[in-house]
Structures are given as structure tokens and as C-alpha cells.
Image 1 (cartoon, rainbow, N blue to C red):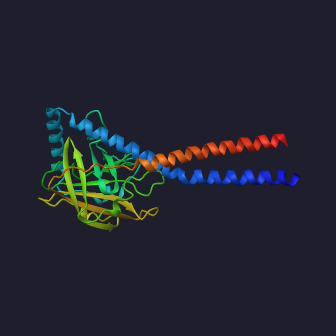
Image 2: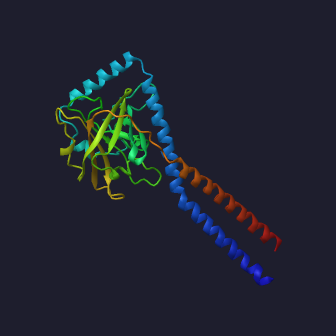
Image 3: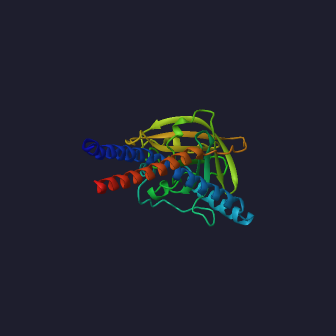
Length: 274
């Protein structure tokens, strides 16, 4: 009996270590699922708000965006490209639809992504969605536009642009700005050094959107560029965010937490009895 009691602390300790390890293992997935769900909800809210804008407001904002697009004839500069994710970004200009801090949204059905797009690339912006790189165009569907949309990848608690490398030529992604929908088809994918902005310049009369993220994970010495050209409009497929696995992990996490607490209580109770 004494030998059995001596083994009890080791048994409870081993169980506790296993449960704690499991919770630590699933925590990043739970956080990624939570943030993905949250960002999808924000993006849908932005889309709904844009669809309810008064025609006069849309016309005013469109003229403002066109004026800004026309003021930059070349596109993104090297210094801007190198400043991705800096905490302070002077070029964040704050173009957004009323009652929102986003200018539009991006949907990539292949990777189940639906994110708000913000104006600028400060770290604050890139932590909550995609950012429009200063010097690039606001997507309006016009000739000679080249929007450069950036996003973080490889973050432990958020997916964001982590999986844009899975896109291949012919895949489509969708941009919504001021209630208008634009369809883009991937035609080019490259890895370049940060100083290389040759693929981000404007090409009249072409209309491009290039998605940019840092690569490889954890090193961030290069930039992955995924470019799409404006194509015939097609209905935006529903971005089916796989909520089931998030809810399953959340349920498992809660169960594991309860088991940990029960294990601790039982261990303390047995210890007091001895």
C-alpha cells in the first residue's frame, strides 16, 4: 500500500505534464482559428457597409481615389518596399470608406481567405489585415492601375498571407472596393529581394494587383510576389472558412483544461489524505 501511495505523485505528475503539453501544442491553432474568424467577420462587415453607401458618397470617394492614382505615374519605390511592417509609417494616408478604417476587402477562395484591406503598411495595419502599399493604386478597375497588397506570413497566432504561395497561374482572387467587385487571375509568381520593385511598376493599359509577403518564414530576407491581372467579372465564390476544426480544437482545449484542473484537485486531495 505504501509503494502504491509513493507511485501516486509520479502518476499525477505525468498526467499533468501530458495535459499541459497538449494544451500548449493546440494553443497556436486555436489562436489562428480565432483570428481568422474575427478577420472574416470584419471583412464581411466592411463589404456590407460599402454596399449601403450613398451614390454621391461613392462618386466623391471614387474621384478622390482616381486623383491619388493619377498623381503617381510610376508606382512603388524601393524605400517604401523596404519599410514593410515598420511601426511608424508616414505614408499611411487613411483612405477608407465612411464608418470604417478599411478601404475594401480581398477574398481568395482557394485558401479560404477573406481579409479587410487597409491603407498603409504599418505594423499596426498588418497585424489586423492586409495593407495597400503606398505608391501603388487603389483598385478601381481602371487602366494602368497596379495595386500592391501586402500581408504578414508565418505568424504563430495568425494566418493572414501565410498560404498565398499555394496560388498558381489561373487561380482567381477578388477585390471589393466601394461596393464594386473586381476579379483577378494569377499570371505570375516570383521571389525577389526587397529592393527589387521592377515587377510593381504600372504598365498602361494593364490592370494588375500584386500580393506581397515576406519569405522564407522566420528569415524574411526576400519577398514573395503573386500577381494577378484584371479579368472578366465572375461571381465571388463563398469563402467557406473551416469553422468546424476551430470549434473542435476549442472544445478539446476546454476539455483538457478541465482535466488539468481535476487532476490538480485530485492530487491535492490525495496528498492531504495521506
